[in-house]
Length: 636
Image: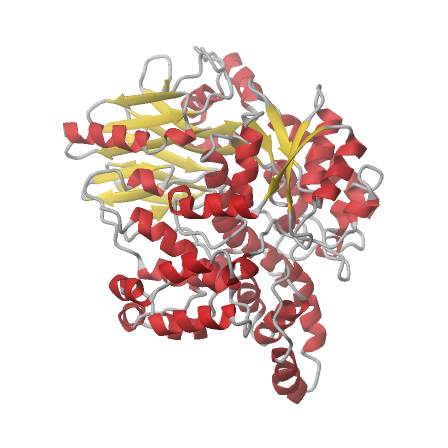
């Protein structure tokens, strides 16, 4: 695991200051790679990297070159099938100088050209300079596990693993992209290809970026292989057979991702996904597995007893730490330093705390991310099913009587309380499925943003539709099935823009590598071909995944109510976080910034503190942005 960066200029060549830019970009990513720094330059390109040594600790320094030095590469991530790939390439006459996975990409490019990426199973963002053909090739993994930002500065291409590293390059503006801000406020993250900084883009998952004398081209090489029409359970292989096949693929993925020359463990939250990964690891690992989880002092958020139950059942070596109010007070003021882009997901805090705790024992951890997207695990899927019944009610009930009744429910700050769920449901159910899906999951609605955004920002947006990125992904979606389309949107938006970004930034801030075996292509491609009714059966989410783990995990774990990895933000905003919120969301600060309407924000905070409404998502989204802005934009 590393951080990579670079600058290329094919027309004018690189002036000396560009090499200094690469050194500065590397220094901004020491947390991603504390073990080593490597650089390469040849007059037209300068590559840099910071290394966290995982595979071939002694000999795997980067950049890595081919035999004659005409191809050089830097890699952030891991190639899990590099040993098989190496054997194939050696049989074809290639000579390896190291035992690293990075070198396998170099020789695969020599042998197969750009198609080499189809042979890679891993999580990665890599940059390859082909000196002979004067071309720079940059690639990002299929699901978007590892990040990559880039921008054009005149005739120069600049790229880096993190936005803050890219901003260390001379001459880059820190102007906010108002379209990206508009999306952030609704989704709680900035979806690719935009970034929060104007002129900077993210390379999309499953895409390759080529920079040569013909210019800059970004092209897809992979997409989630949903069948064009929904596969039916009737005439399909039996559910039991499919469940066995699923568990076998999870075990295969875990076996591949256990490869490491340094200590490795597993995140175990007590939820189904992390428990599935832990179970698979306990079945295939040659040694006893170490697992890591955190407890919460608020019982409505705590699942630690389920993690302990799984640990006892599987016989793993379990480690537990407790996230307390003091933990929150320590981490929140540092959020602007830890976040690479604004991220309105408050579960970043416990994810960072868990990563820091695990790093005391291991350098690599397996995580359970991906199960909700692959197997319809989010409560929104159940809400969509309920919407089918709700829309059959008489119009007067749907549009007036029930919403009025729900709005009168007292506001609770407990974890996803019933009043919160009901209010979200009734005020979003009337929209098209792809829109209500994101209104239920996100933060500010388009209507709320009319009051929130300053007039100048609204004018700059020019009537842009927040959900244009949703419609864009729907147009690209390979399936016509509406349920699979929702799963596809979860993978392309929420998972990549929120979940994977959160885990990457939180873990790499602690110099910890986290691998998600459920997002291995072996599992993703298998799950995509399954009938949807085996994922959401009635109102039972992850039905086939649970079925595959019966007899392996306790039923108490498999069939418990889902809880997310969250913290009591709603309550904290009323008391412990209130002074910080009042400071960062105060009128004079907002007026100087020129992005938000002070009266709207102050009114929202006032109503939340008085218990008139639960604005935890909206207020945390604003608070996270302000913490990021103060550290990354406002500072000279």
